[in-house]
Length: 368
Image (tube, rainbow, N blue to C red; front, side):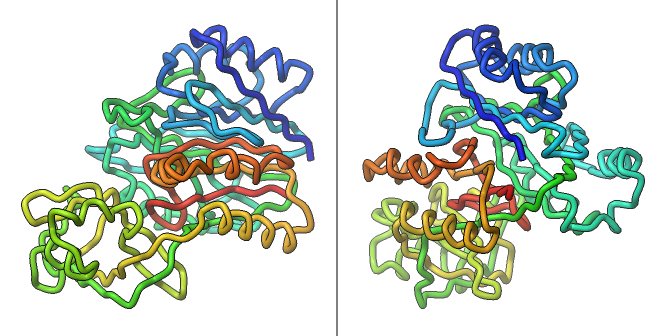
């Protein structure tokens, strides 16, 4: 398998694209995926990278920080190129107007035409998907649900960022940049692949049941029949005023078959709680306690490497809240070092995709 990575901190976007090209020009890529700081003009960057690699499928998104083998970066562009030995097929489609619509039928009709088989019958062991979504659209749940209703192929990915400005995020494909959109890429790798989903939390024996919600706002009005903020604070043994200080270390989690699907609180409004991911009425969630991100991630990588025999490439979708915690603890270097021996790119996301939309997680596509 042949995978190459490159990164650039040169500005503006034209220079960064040229720098990426200079590092990969001896490589003949079939697919180039890139993640770029919002400091770059995304439309120009997308156009220039497509011009640099005219025979390749190019796609990517804006970020809240970039990851490449051994480094966690800011104000950079990172890219990973795959050649014919690695990918036998790749087809990318853009789903626009996801806030208002978000219908994935046309995208999957295109995938079916390209690969010559129905989406429902595609073997999830032979195909995999990457999904990049406007991180401010609040449409991730809808998109992931519709993908899941259409195919058994596993899509992994993340929500685009804008370096914590929360103004505008972009997804890119085919030389263009889009907002209010999602990019779906359906891959048929020539090598084995798998996934890592890791979130560094223990589940505490403190259950909250959502008894009143406003799903379109990702707002929980009541837990256990009490004002949501009051119930959350009581579970932690703190006051409502103090509760926000515990959001990062004590988010909530849906637990299914010993798997944790994290829902991170964003803010308290009155006595309601707004989350970065939906909690539906009747959903049972548990208070979580944070653990060692670096140690847990290393264990996940080692375990996957043992099972696969080797790892030759990783695309890492790492939650911005994990990155912020790593920064607070002075551990960004240690985290980046976990990937120093493996060709890796990734970015700090505004949400992670894997069997739905989740928070405070790293989801990774891993190639053997």
